[in-house]
Amino acid sequence: MKVINFAETNSVINQYVAEIRDVNIQGDRMRFRRNIERIGELMAYEMSKELTYSVKQVQTPLGVAPVSTPDDDVVIATVFRAGLPLHQGFLNVFDRAGNAFVSAYRYYKDKECRELDVHIEYIATPDLTQKTLMLVDPMLATGESMELAYRAFLSKGRPARLLIACVIASRQGVEHLQRLFPEDDVTLWCAAIDPELNERSYIVPGLGDAGDLAYGDKL
Image (cartoon, rainbow, N blue to C red; front, side):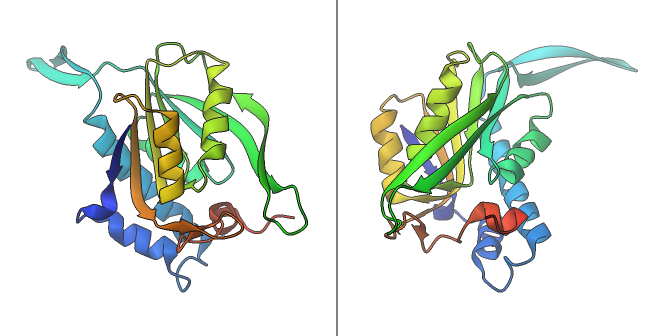
């Protein structure tokens, strides 16, 4: 699997990442959501360069113009609820894409909050057969929820190509996906990769709970 880490390059993505991490800024939920969305827009633009293109003839008022446009049948997929702002950023760019959603949540099986599991309970998706699937989720911690989401989507058809995007990843999560997807045609795009997880499987330094920061606390 190919891994692209935008933090290793200089771009405005780093500014948006700095703001969603900053405890003095991230309390503004609207700005937090918009920054995640803007990161998605810029990632989607960069990912668009990897699609398959062909030249089409476009009729203008004065003649015919050749334009090279994507041929991929794109489906953008995400996990409720934290993934919604990132999904919207991708949809702003790939405005004709299909959309897929899975409802998944992680929970602790022990009182000490050390034994983590993920539960999948709802899927809404078009047929994914031979589509270009963009699986987007802001946080890649252990990688297990991403894996379960992908396996759930496979029940609705096998895509021709898989592109994965996250905002903050842990090194452990990246390595998990590398083991899961050893193929060269799968690419993981990250705005930043952090070194570790804490005892509750949160990314460190990370940014906290992306869903809560975007939409408020949950029970």
